[in-house]
Length: 246
Length: 262
Image 1 (tube, chains in turn red, orange):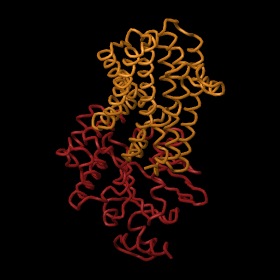
Image 2 (cartoon, rainbow over the protein chains, first blue to last red):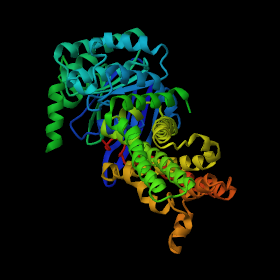
Image 3 (cartoon, helix red, strand yellow):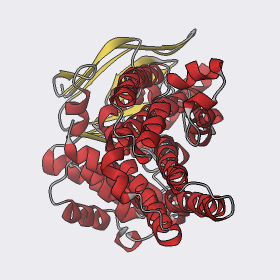
Image 4 (cartoon, rainbow over the protein chains, first blue to last red):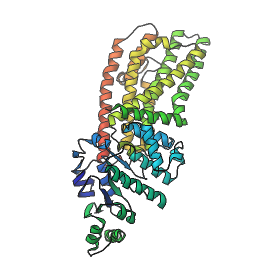
């Protein structure tokens, strides 16, 4: 397993946000992480990124413990979320230059040019971040996330602000990165059809716990508790979310 | 520590300084304005009141050095606030960047920015008031070192407090050094303070720097006494500031504040 999460717990005072979550991700796998709001997805993601210290449990990535090998692990990872911003006065080029240096990217300008082309934002190179639309900002985030050619990529709702055409291009780019060099991806999204098409397996969280792990069809059958021929994650999600409210 | 990550922090803040009018103002405007005001005042003291030239030199020198100390402390904290205001913290700390590399990068860029401000103020003092601080620099280096070290310590402590209490206490970035100005004996000697305040002033490396600076500028030579007191106090404050900052940073990660600061 490239990522191994073991019995992860996170408590904030009396509130338990993540309650004994365990799952693994194989090399080259695209793993979806689903769940209603408050299920513990973001907290789990932030613990995997080392931004939050777990109360208990262990995260091992590339065979090493996140608690003791943070730098080494993060050097081979990257992350993006449309809810995270960049310094808004700086241009796209300047922001990407800073992150290319941060990861020690060789030939940084060539790599930046490649990423700008891949996400179709080369024309935005000299624009300050403050003047970009949400969709353009998301694509800058994706370009930053691919700058160091990571072995593990964490994506938090990467297509949330993208129109269907650009979202399609992004999905293609991710699939290409996986097929070309075996990039491993952990992916959260509220777009169920996108998850069905993109993810090999899914870990479904609710109330901070794993309620199912498997392929989209396995998750569908496990949670709806009936035989299905095709995945129906939308239906699964609605059932879990409604039960969570009740 | 990896040099490429320290350089990344330097480059990030150099871009910010270039794009942000506030940073340019902080860097040059205030030090130059201070010198303009103090320059006219000391000109009046020299010509109108007949004050001794060496005392006037001391006043102008102290103004330049206090400006340097203040800028440095403020820019350390404002550098961190820039990350907070632009909601860049998650991006930054989801990279392999360590807290030591981040602080080292901030120190380097702020040292450069402070030098630009001090340089501009010194050139103005030279051209407009015939006060040339540059020949004094070798004699002042030990005291400058102590001022810079204390500014680091205060800057790190202020940043730590902003980490802990968020933008509610961001005003400290501009006010913390000012709080120390009356007891740092910038423009007057330690003996002019009331007895009870002298004990507090004695505990500040700034006091020892300005006392030593005055002694050097009126021809009294180097004061090992004030230099080593300054170094000793700085060692304590620096260790405390770093310790508190690391504690606060780890607490922020444990309590999930790092991702909520924005």
